[in-house]
Length: 163
Image (cartoon, rainbow, N blue to C red):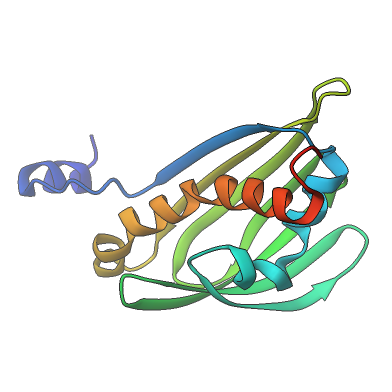
């Protein structure tokens, strides 16, 4: 254990520095349909509960850079990510700017024969400011955990119940 770890243990710190969220769902839509919803960051404020604003900064065939403003529990924070696109099967996100020391993630869209898609999301994050970490880590973790559900609900609204 590092010296920092001993201090945290001695002080009873219950907030691990790095958090990881993993979620998945089976949906009756194609990988391309689900990929299109996740890639369309400009529409996030319409259906992701904690996103109050979204700005497209740049888009190429292989990358999307965007800024999201999250609003939760009375706090507002903006962060920018660069998303590396491998349509329609994968999207990797990396922090460009924001209140994080680390923010990285991966969306996956795996076909299940002709029955639909298994979507997966893995996000790892750590806030750069310890005070912000204490205040927002659990809230941001909960928000990340709700992302898959938000996209499943959006898919139903956009593509219909049967896919």
